[in-house]
Image (tube, rainbow, N blue to C red; front, side):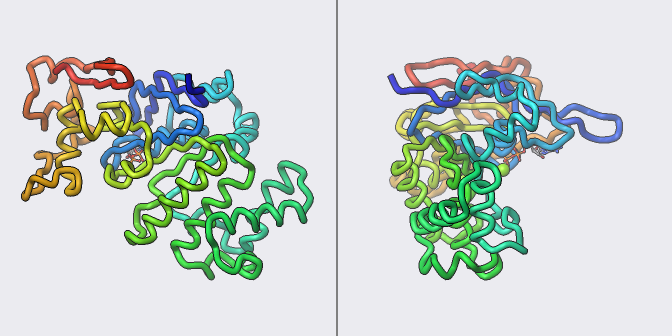
Length: 320
Ligand SMILES: Nc1ncnc2c1ncn2[C@@H]1O[C@H](COP(=O)(O)OP(=O)(O)O)[C@@H](O)[C@H]1O
Ligand SMILES: [Mg+2]
């Protein structure tokens, strides 16, 4: 039996919006388990709630959010912790890397100072030891000429290099879990492949678990063991990457797979899912995908399907 390192149960994120305070559910009853040393991918269109899942795990959602459910790490429900208590888990146990590397760094501090700060100030490590560790990690993420580059400021790095430095920064306190949110979006394909390979190597090297978030199933399939398909805040399908590619069940997942060129070599015309994602104000009462689903039954429009097991390690929320 592989050890579960993070267990998420019935996680919902609701936002208060507008002046006459309406509730908008960005994440609804999400559940999953992250296994030690595994990579769990989360895929979904923009706005499907991927980032909110990541942020809620670390207690970083915006102030107008209400987060409910459980996020269990080492027998502790992280959602019950105060911000101060939560700070002990951020960086140390669970670290997050976001898409916009530039925004993560302080423009007025050298890379060295930013990397050693959490070690020196939060963990009481000596400056020399912290610096050694920083150099080791920057080497690991393949920053060339580290000894000189570490004294540079963020704007002196290229985008791809900064992205890699950010991964190094996230690893500085030896987290057990790394959450990477769209870190390969907005970089060119070559850099994308380098970052994926790097993450894969680092994750194996450190025996870490990884939650890898991307809107691109093609990218995700290169790295993930398990995968969650999100649509409008709902999990549509949750299974192993292999099952998802070879035996997708949900009509939404099937559509998603058919729209990736390399997965279906026999087809000369790229399929796409017709229709548009429902508007916040116009969410169907039933399955969020019902208005675009070719196979929708009458009850799909009125009832929400729950996530159900269809075989071992394979759950789907669909009445079909
Ligand atoms: N502070 C907020 N207030 C209201 N709605 C928000 C807030 N932050 C995010 N949302 C909404 O939550 C939904 C999910 O967002 P997000 O998790 O960022 O999607 P994804 O990462 O999949 O693109 C989106 O519809 C977004 O507009
Ligand atoms: Mg996002």
